[in-house]
Length: 113
Image (tube, rainbow, N blue to C red):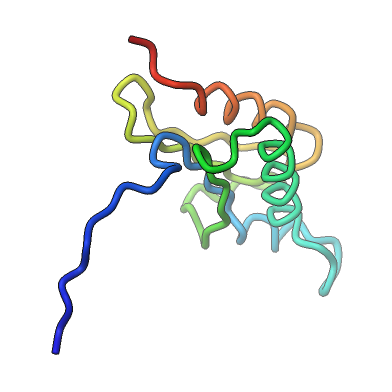
């Protein structure tokens, strides 16, 4: 028996940050060392929780985003807000994490009227 899938709008529909996990695997210094993409995701989540933005926003890792930067990590932003476009950034997961946090924080704000 098939069940009908129920459509729903998650709380984070207006701000989703996607960090490419495969990029991080390529940057890991040696096998078994921490994945920089996972570390970036975890840091962003902690920062957003501290700013009371978690829930309206979500940070997730994904498999390949098909951008494949050399020595960096691809980070995509998406939203169902009409005033925000989906786009991707290519970043150093440590040196540029504050910039990614700033972008995510700005995108988490309510849409202008």
